[in-house]
Image (cartoon, rainbow, N blue to C red):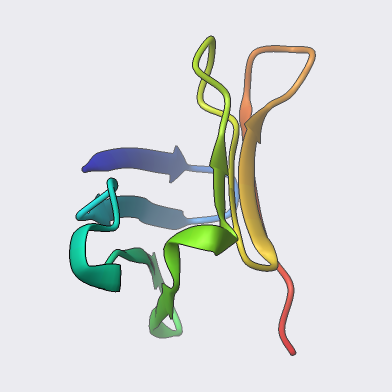
Length: 88
């Protein structure tokens, strides 16, 4: 499991983004990837949980660049993390 934590005092937002892969060798065809994001704002909390087959997962072994389905996190040129979610 990998967890990224964010704090933006200017926007008044705290957030977490996590993902994990269950059964990465896909033994028995039961591998699964899950991504969870929670943002805590003054207006309330926002939660998203996405589950995907293992084929939807890709990661860079040199840095925290991850794609799960239409969602991704990557390290920008300035060293900051960028998390994006594409809704279907």
